[in-house]
Length: 363
Image: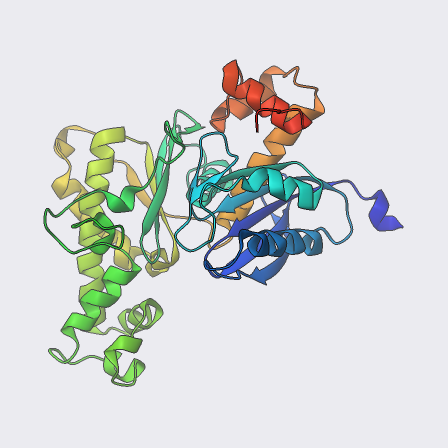
């Protein structure tokens, strides 16, 4: 009975290749409670993934009414925030995920790319708070990212901005899973870190051989991080190499966007200054005119794996504010929506309104 009287909650969901993480997120960005499900995989019907999302949302809500749900998806989300066009580790290809989830959950749903959602969490509550513009780079298996310019998320024409990992930094270089060659993430990522460390095993003395039981194929990023923290020279050299390449790529981004701040997130960022110090040095060395300009700070992200969930919930809360006032937007709400990169006028805004009311007959 008491639960039914509780105020509605806003829920954020992060959907990755291995897990679905849902959480009740308060207006200050704090996480009240969470629920988790395993991702069924990429070679299954999309409905199985959507069922896992809905189950995690219901469990996280705990019987309390749901005001809105924000979903951060590891894939390409279209500019209208309706469909996942492609997801390398999920079965969505052009699927109208937002509408289908709204039917399952019976609450308003917003959909965005996971890197955009994570960037929004950092901008609103984390390491990019107070910055007018920021570049957020996420380093995991590969490299993802997002852009905040003038206090607004920049999604690009197709909603796919921020795919920094596939900038070419070495012509005819390492072959990438995307089909290209010489992509940045082949030189600065979790996979790159392991590859560099593995290449030096057996050549120089290292505890890495003990950590992976003498089987280089079993070596992983956390092992390299552990060894580096313990003073292993091979592991530290691998971080220096990957950090150097990180700074080279960041110099390209700074030359293009000239941001106030650069935030590095993702699992590899757990190494902290062991990764960031060589990146800062390489940034200054590689950036054109570095001696005649203010070089942006390079800082570690404040949020860990929960960033996408927190950011998605906040974006959903902004949509909820818009609907609550009947689309006659107050100046503050219009400003917050603009900061989130959401349309407030024109055909895209009208399409959003029709979809939220359930009156979009074009689909």
